[in-house]
Amino acid sequence: MSDSLTLTFIDKKLLQTTLIDADNAIHYTLTTTSSGFRGKKITTISAASGSVGLINWREKTFTINGVEKKWEDLKTRSAGVFRTEREWNWGPRPFNLKYHDSHKELLVRCAIPSS
View 1 (spheres, rainbow, N blue to C red):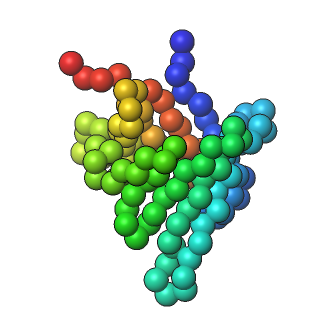
View 2 (cartoon, rainbow, N blue to C red):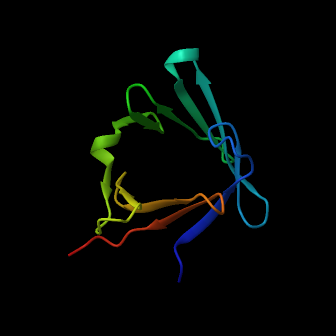
View 3 (cartoon, one colour):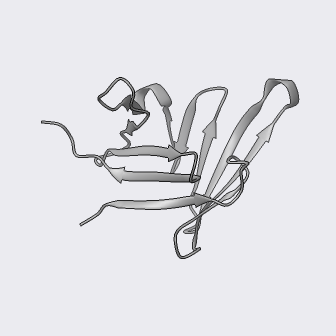
């Protein structure tokens, strides 16, 4: 059984776009505010289910379901010097996240905790 879902960004502006699955169903919509020379501030992630998350770029935090966590507390690099995949731990099920630029795909799969 596969625990992965491929989502496609429909626009090259990744922080101002929608993520869809293979059936063109919308899973997330991203909108980002910026302040000129200081760059991006907040990315709001709205799920089709109605839930909302935030990425605060300046503070380097995520807020999901009202819980805020620092990036450094959530991510680790997967084994291997040249691997770009990151493991993220939010709750009991860690997951791996990898963005494939050539296909504009974001692959998220459940990570199997190492023994």
